[in-house]
Every structure is written in C-alpha cells, then in structure tokens.
Length: 267
Image (cartoon, rainbow, N blue to C red; front, side):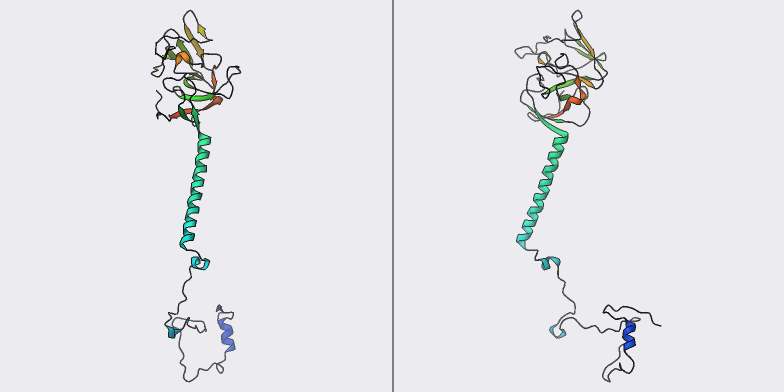
C-alpha cells in the first residue's frame, strides 16, 4: 500500500490515484507522458505564473512591507528619525538628572571660613560616593540644637580626623597633631581681621582646652568626624560646642570639583 502524502491542495496523492482509473485517464494520442525527474512527484500540474507571451519570468514579484504600508516616503522618514532622536535625547536627559540627583550635588560657598582654598560665592560639586577621609572637604548639615544654626543649613569644612583618632592642637602656634603625628597643612591660614596671614592664633576652642599648656585635645567618637575651616581664625567648627563632632550620617557629600576657577586639587 502506498504511503499517503498531502499535496497541499486539499487532496492526497492516494486520493487522486484512486479516483483516476487507467481507462479514465488515458492520455490523448497527441500528448506525451513525462516522467518525473527525481523520485516520486505529486500528480499535480503546475500552471505558469504570468503570461508567457508577455515575457513574464514566471516568478511572482516581491512586495516589500514598506510598500504595502505606504512607508518609505521621504517626509515620513524624516519625521520618524526626528522622533527617534527626541526619544534618545529625552532618555539621556532623564538619566543624567537621576544620576546627578542621587550621586552628586551642586553647592555654593557662603562665608569665608575656607579661605583661601574656597572663596565666598564659588560653586562646588559634591558626591555622596565613598566615605570621607582626613583631608577631604565635606558639606554637612548641623548636628546640634544650637539656636545659632538651622539644622538644615549646610556647612563646608575640611576633615581633620575620623572616629577613634585623637586630635591635639597647639593653640600657641596653631599646629595640629592626629594620633601624635603633626599634620602638614599647606592649606591652613591664620588670617587677621584685615585678611593678612599673621601667623597668630586668635580663635580658641570652647571645650577640651588647657589654658596652662594652651593645648586642645579630644578623641573623636566612632561614626563622627572632627572638622575645621582652613581659615583657622575665622571658622566655627569642631573646636566649638556650636558645631562639635559631625555625625557621619549628616554628611551630604565630599567636594570633588570647584567650578570657577576650575580645580579638583584642594591641598
């Protein structure tokens, strides 16, 4: 028994063969029987596509999807390209805003406590990435209930020591020691009221200060920072009870860039 195969036209080869007996399908005298070239072939006559007399190749022309949809016109292509550019631009702006809001902050210096490293009115960029280390300049909010400062007011100071370290300051010379090691502070100045670097200490700590030895000493609690302004005679910082030790959770970011004049070096 022959295997039944689908012709794709609704009938199988077997059905076709069963319906055509030898008597009913005898070829006319003028017709020639053509044997299949390769193996078994479907008993289906393939009609040519197109008009042979008109020179048709017998192949149906391909129709592009764009042609069917009416696309591909110059005006439509320009509009589509513009929409793509606008979409990319909008996405890029949104991504930049998210990154800048989450990781960076734009701040303006207000005051003279960081002279001559930072001047009043200069714009800074800070980042919240990474932990502040001694020598870094940070922006932080107040950590005290002092009536002199709003808790939401941001201050900018330099980190001198972090939790567990001991700070000693010679209030006669202004020399700073951390864990017994003298700091080299090229950035620190002792400006007088006229703005000249007089080299004379005029501001004294309000706690931890020995008047006889003129030494200030304190150990920084864990999770806190000891900070000072570079303008040592005109800075309200960790040497006073108004600011005290800065809770690390109050740090808004580390200064990484000064916009004008541009610099990333604050030493």
